[in-house]
Length: 484
Image (cartoon, rainbow, N blue to C red; front, side, top):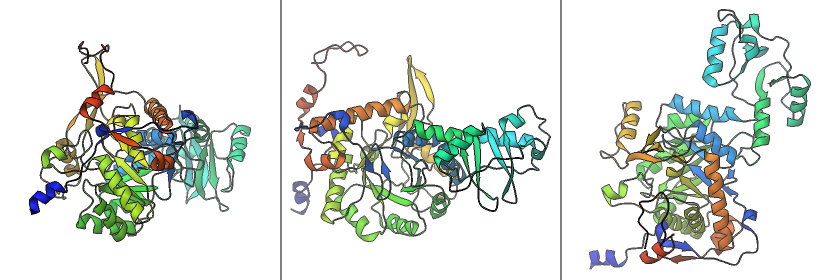
């Protein structure tokens, strides 16, 4: 009876293919839908899209592009601490009213070194600093035809226009225009360099009004960490807004106790995961203080072979509903990120309707121009490399980086392959936003909180799934078979 009872009590672990969003009465047009949400207790997004912390999905270029569009990219950890910090710094420098992490040069350095710094960091000028005080500025015009062996002080501009820390955007624009300059150093009352304003960054702010930003006006920045790597977490904490504890199965006593210690040592918001059950959510919210968000879903990703290898997992929709119910019953209001298995804007709508605040996607973003995966042509079509972080090659790289670490598991739980090239991420996001707004319009829900309260779902039978797709027609580009 004891084992038969397990079968009788077995729950239905629903997936995206099992459900359909039912139409509801709408009192607005889809273009009026508000997609603003929160990714952590303290930070908001203007679109509920997050890219996965995978080495073929999110590095600085993807993180910058998504933040500018209103979403978030989580920079992967399958690299050295120094490499991850450099990627984070690129996000920080990409767009900010006042850049705080300024790359500078000494007056006694060579022009050759200055050119190398400009090339390495993709910048066109360097403040010249001596004993922390600004003594000049070096621009591309100063060094373009200069002898590389000259000292910086021999070619730099010495009479530098500066600004105080209290300067506003409008005042900065006026000074830049009046003096026909592109860089404006910010100094304190003692002449110490404390920041830099660039014409390019001001233009970028105006070009991307929907960008996700922190309280200082910088692009929102997140990075993944191991729960056992507090040293990396503390190093990243100086530069990021959000840290994402990145493990496949967070509901583990060692992982949870290490994460508790990690949170105590950082100031950034910390998202934990992945979890997949009601019980896991209860343990997290009752045993770990100051968790800022939850990442849910185990085994649903397109490159995840956990289910095939272990027959264990918690499909994203099932996990989302379980965790959302736990938070509601315990009176905790905390962002839930549905992670894995999302193929379309319709899947996003269903995940949000079951309690998610945002969704995390790997496959969809892996196919974008901004992802770091290799672009190849196969059979006349373009594809990009995509691999799971538990795939053999990803595990081999991580082991090479952390040479003294012992892998927690002795078997790979991910695969690697190629996904269709989808173009730039802005085009992909535009299509996802339009599809999600249309879905919410059908449901009669004008915002994500409304979707939680009002959306209704129905089960689809296998034959119903086929009928709800295009059928009985020849689709160009397919095999020529007419679907029944």
